[in-house]
Length: 176
Length: 176
Length: 176
Image 1 (cartoon, chains in turn red, yellow, purple):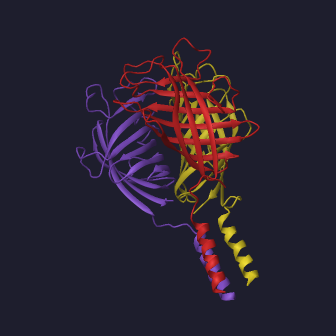
Image 2 (cartoon, chains in turn cyan, green, brown; image 1 turned 30 degrees about the vertical axis):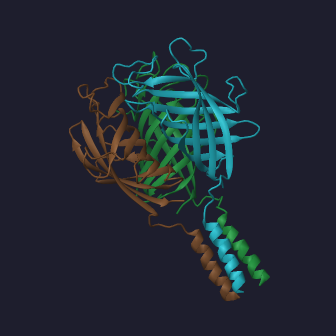
């Protein structure tokens, strides 16, 4: 009986400790083409807020500090902008530092493919110049019901001030 | 003893599995009257960001893509705008698609009634044209200390581009 | 054997119940100097959205309703603006009420000191005129991996419409 007791104690405490290996992992790309006054057909995002002296077709000086950008970007399984989209990344980012490139992100992956149906919501600071940076996955719906986790973001491409592509490695640690 | 072991195993794993029936449920309405230049007295929200060519008293063309709206809307227990408010819905939404109506929501219910004291914070994508859509409840305070859940939103009324009313069915799955 | 069963039942249910005493506590200050057209060198934040009739160098009338402010503020361990910064508070706030001072906050503490490396993300309503107000800690990374909690905010200083300092008492209840 003592043995049973000990075994069960172990079993229970294993229950208590949350897992630090992801319970689910998802790697996706999304593609942002910012409106610059001449690309209305292709653009997937637009500047909608700017600091004093700024305008809405050109990112501001001082590392774009104060620009708010709204986006509806295609999500793909690989790094090809023209691959079939599996969903849309929707939300906004704000450039928030005057002496380097950083932004604050609030957005949602709306996934709608044979493999995944549901949403994943992200929030956090993005120190853009670092190779990898972690933001929080604060919630999910559908296939991602009540999920939480960490997303590691990498800039996979950056072309002038018109196009960038992010590699997003989503690790869920709470899966339900 | 084996029976005890199995019983306890079941009991422990029941501890592990989180509950999928809500531990708390709340149905509320909130009412948004957008400022259009002529309704300063009644308006509960205002356009504060717009894409190039837009303005702050009229929602933009292209499905309002790029408009940021700040709101402080009354929350009621039923669908009547004139019912006693039990709190305020405060935050913002951003119209974020060029070819249909979708928005991204970041807001908080600040409840202050005999029944509920505390806040509930929401974030997520709102594909407005769908009858029901789920967003994440990412946190709470007061009576909703550390709560998490899912809110199902329905457009309960929509009058031109001045008034809408949302039916919000909040299901908490983590209640503390 | 019955005794063992009961003991283990207690042990398991103790596992289930989450702790209501914080598993980690952090008290920090951050300092916001808003750009007013004449303090570009010192300013740590800027108005980037305003209601109709507003501008970007002066907070709007009607309790600043409709102003969006982006910030990159120094975080310190004490209430001295000139103390060594242990990180930056980055994000935005929106003034969202017409008849009193309230705001909606979305921001992240990016901590980078010998003591703490990682981010803490916050969201929620801030009824500024109340002495203390609670907002949600919706996620964390690094040292704050997957953390959740409640932050109690106090206005520690307020100087005209140029400088304020917030005292932030972060209580984590989910620590991993």
